[in-house]
Length: 250
Image (cartoon, rainbow, N blue to C red; front, side):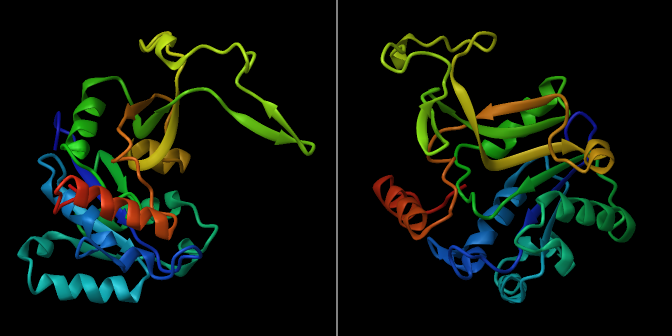
């Protein structure tokens, strides 16, 4: 809880992955991928309730297996996600809404704020989650998402021809060190990296969207922004952890 607001954290871990088979329950640094997000949620000093939304039987088995060796998981509720909310084209919002309503109706927990932690973003070093919550609570926001700062040097293929779409001459563009970085005049772009999402519960339920009209984009570094989409991403995290003597990703 923060500022009197109760927080529900939902780890969305559906079965099936086209890119990497069994991705959500594959081990990373000795821990099933989806559990890194669960443990991160449990370590937060602000989150009141943590649930897992999944239709994956392997994740469910691992969850109950870990109950036997980690008592902290006893406070985590498993919410069986309906298969219609777990297709390749399902939006995360469908699972978030289902879990929020389930929490209200069956767990006797009516949250003011909903957090979504996706297993494919397992790295949340440096108290990232609690820093996001603190920033969210400090401003007039109705939602928050994490972002990675990028230079605005973008190209797009249109009608089989590559075009520079960043609004200035690609040959006379500024050097990165000349860009303005203050909040009001920044020329950098922020890429939605998918690590942490927060939203007021009423906004989520009314708009069916996890991003409201008054969002905060919380800047994170490259290590925390790694999103696992390929074998390379697994290897990258493992090698970065080894290089930095990390045994934990949170």
